[in-house]
Amino acid sequence: MQIASRRTSLLAKTKQAVQQTRRQVRRRIKTPEKTKTKGPVPRALCAMRVALLICLLFTTFRCLISQSNNGTLVAICITGQIGRLQPRFLIANLLKANPTFVFRLFYALQATENPVEDLVFNTEHGFHPTRFAYMTPMRIEQELSKDIHKSGNALVKATRFVTPKSIEAWRAFMGNNTLDRMTGFSDEMAQHTILNMYSYHEQCSRDIVEEETSSGRNFDYIVSTREDIYFFHPLDLTVLLADQASSQCNLYSKNCMTWGGINMRFQLLTRSAGLSWLGTRLEFYKSLYNQSRIVDGGPERFERQQMEFLNLHHCPVSVDRIPAAAARHTSVHQFCFVGQELGCIARHCQEPQWRGANYISCWPGDLDIGWIVSHTCPPVPPDIWSEQHANWTAKHNSTSNDDYEPLEN
Image 1 (cartoon, one colour):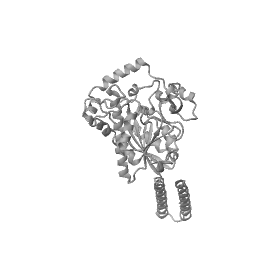
Image 2 (image 1 turned 135 degrees about the horizontal axis):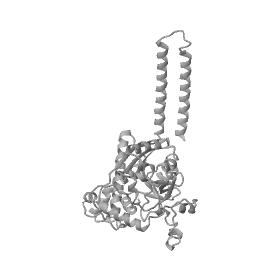
Image 3 (image 1 turned 180 degrees about the vertical axis):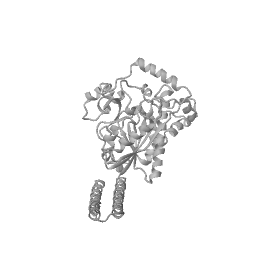
Image 4 (image 1 turned 90 degrees about the vertical axis):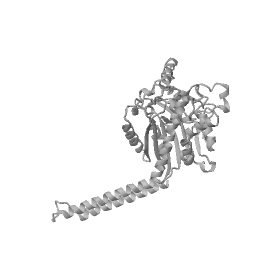
């Protein structure tokens, strides 16, 4: 509120100064048709006044930017695939919903020669690539910057297109012949894609540190999220962080779809925790070999072990406070939810282990469940899935760095 008040006062003073300058120009400079003294003096004086006016407006603009930078500064790391990129939900329900915060966005997207074809391998069916899949990298960067800038309190500071590594490249990096530290997967395919995702996180971390060095100011918080993030309603960061000082939380995520670990849709961290969290992904995975340890599950449990290793204080909150989910683009302004996003609502709520205290909904309490189910992406038919799986495995068991489609986060 104080920042908004200062902005209003500053704008009012600026308007007064501009109006006063205009009045002075009208009094002191006559138009060429009415003046008796012809020559360069009035024109030069007029040009000087215009230059002063432009200088005044520029100074005011810089001052406004300086005022806005006094807000809470948040870095947002967004990773994923070009063909699933849809920033409109992030803009509407995070950036615009928190006008007293200042956001700087850092994109680390999977480099690919054909974003459309790379969307074939997936766990859902019937969705389509977003408009970004048909753009060049330069155009993607331009469109993202333009869309984000319209929010009024956010800028894109980095847009990276990171080339994924092959299975063999990750084996060499880990110094081991098998990528097997997560037991939740029967082969190396999933762990290979997860390691590439974590390499994008580390790219974000480096870009954030570079921006801090360049700007001379550290971020207050860091958000880690995905390219197809959806919000059921505006996320109020002020409410979410209201008890942060007293609770000493330095990692927030929603308390459902955790698979025994930490939900990965949207994570909010303090600066120091965020840099450690994103910047040591691969190092921690590699340390599991050195310590002869494994993770009994998938990336959610991997991140829980990393959290414990970094001694972070995790505060899981309800989906009403972090109303985030993953959504797939189907057509203009239309989407469907990832099937797994249903959690226990559609498949497990009638089973005994999901009744009573064990039941945690992944949807806001006032949301129509029928609407959710009707907006769920249909699963890929088993025969198509088997064919896609075989093609993908054959492609990525080679030594090349061909592009791929990461599995669900």
